[in-house]
Image (tube, helix red, strand yellow):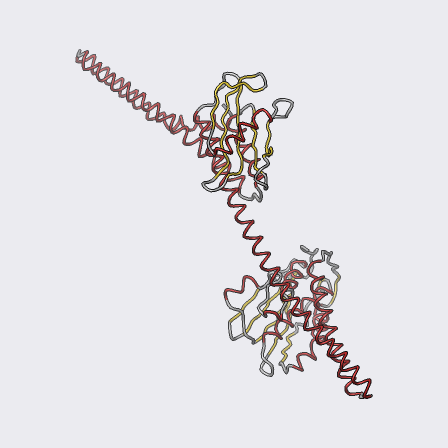
Length: 450
């Protein structure tokens, strides 16, 4: 018997001993009564009654032992399964737990391939020099096909005698494989041990089923988001190309007519379209590229203002009111200049898309928090706001509330930059009133995740 099983048995014996002790005491008392009364017949009946009761209590003890053993076995399985991502890891956990609890001479776990035809070995114990898994592959396959457990007592495998239990890895709707466990010689696998193998196989089977279901859902969601993204990107690129064509046509017409104003108008369209295309490509590259942040000590206010200057003309064209609130007492901060600038531009783009022309207002500012040794940065608008059901998705790559006008890169990049700086980001938003993004980054840090 393996160590975990012995430990459980010791615990159960402690629990059951007071009960059996009571029965022994009762038996002793009845015998004393029998001796005192001298009534052999009644004493025999009492003695038989107590013996039967004691036997039943022994059966109870074994039942409790089996129950606690199975519970402990399931606990070991669940602890190991908590962070599992694929079925191969699951069957390894099952095999290891069976090995720890039952100490068998071999464990072979087979899985059916994705083609539903191949049947391959996924777990093997011990080494092939000690036991050849091919000896029980047919047994495992038969168990898999039938979907039923198979028990073989004193069967010959490679010239040796084994006691074998084979349990299918299956749910009510799916079949995944089989687990085959054996013990050689006269060491028969007990019914309670077979029950552990079967129950473990059931638990693992449903876990495999859940993993496959989740993976299927994730795959479908990815296909949907990729489709939405391709739609958004193609629409955006199509608009940019149309503008480029219009700009080229204007320049051609201006060249024929020697019209300087028309030439300038065409030039402006080309320049604007070029900038849009460049920003789109940069956004895709910016998010997908893994890079080390280059932390350099500097004036973060100055960099944020430079990013704001890039957008000032657009703000003026849309007639958006800008309110700036700068903390002049901020110490030098270690940050990646280019990444912070990109983050601010994306937040401003998001705010400008949210506000109405002539009615819009955007607040941007900074504040040093000495007790936390961080710099707080905020960009706030009085725009349309974010519906509660969308708040959890706004940082998802490819997700955009702008329909075909957006690509879903902007806020995903913002979050990535914040993480690169070991910072935090908070979003407060009310539909119809506006949104506030608040970011905190450490004054000094070693950089974060990519």
